[in-house]
Amino acid sequence: HASLDHPQALLHQKRYSIGGAQRERETAAEKRGSVEKRKAMKIALLAFEGVGHLNPQLALASKLVARGHSVCFFLASNKNEDAIRALPFPKEVKVCVDHDKAHALDWKNLDPSDAKVSGLVLMLAKITVEAMPRLLDELRGWGAELILYDAFVQGAPIAAKVLNIPCCCTVTITNVNGYTLLEAGDLGETEAGRRQVLENHRNSKTLAECRKILLEKYGYDIFSHGIMLNSYLPTGLQVCTGIKEFEQEMPEVVRDIYGDIDKESVYVGPMLISKEEGRIASQEKLPKKQWIDDPFPYDRLRQYVVCPFYSLPLSS
Image 1: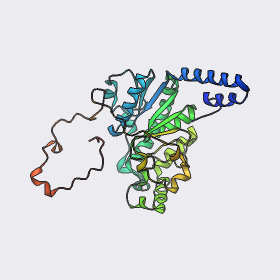
Image 2: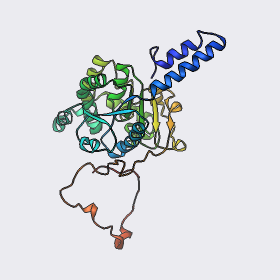
Image 3: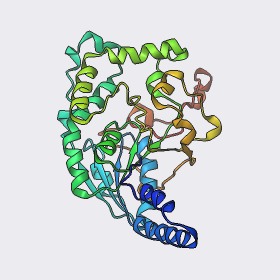
Image 4: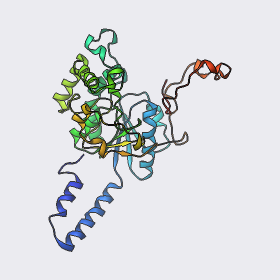
């Protein structure tokens, strides 16, 4: 994310406004000064509550703190609040929306047009609408200089746009072009089907209402400025914990919105954090033992087909 007010843009302008050796000396001095100023940044982390999404961000946050940066978690629910507050490194935590209010969709009385849309997408859109006013106030008040966010957090690119600050998205699936919204069901197998998926979302009454509010208040269109569940900002940075060789081809319907964003993305591989460093292994304390905790029935192995679709810990 860049603007004419951004330090790098100012540096770029000055590089060509002075000449000869003086130009080189002043440019080098400004670079050193810019680096010095960036050594201690205030970094806002906007996390998604699923532990497979959250733990890579915790690993990154611990390293940022170790390098002298300040981090603050801005949460859209209180589900992980206690676990994050207990992390063994300095941080701040702010909850930006009332958990029950944000999740209180009237599932029994949704409009028929919502039936073709994932419940997760509907819930996250509602959370975004509820959280944005307080999120922006909290980010301004804390003085955030960089937003580090999960791809499921739709409010992050909106906040970066409104506040004109840089943002970086952590993509914790196999590749940047793994578009969760478009991969559900048979429709995701063809370009026509993927376009139909997006059309179904545009026709959703609940999403249309959320779009109207976000567009009027913040100038952000959830249908044309991004792909839900992959909320990238084209002028931001996408950092993926997958492997570049596994990258899928970007669907044309996505390229209409994101352009060549995949070519600018960075692959870093797994970002791991140990239990001692604060890894969150479970989000809920279960009152009793569940069937999944029983010993694996090796004596009946022939009756089972094990499909390891995920290597990440999943919440219950």
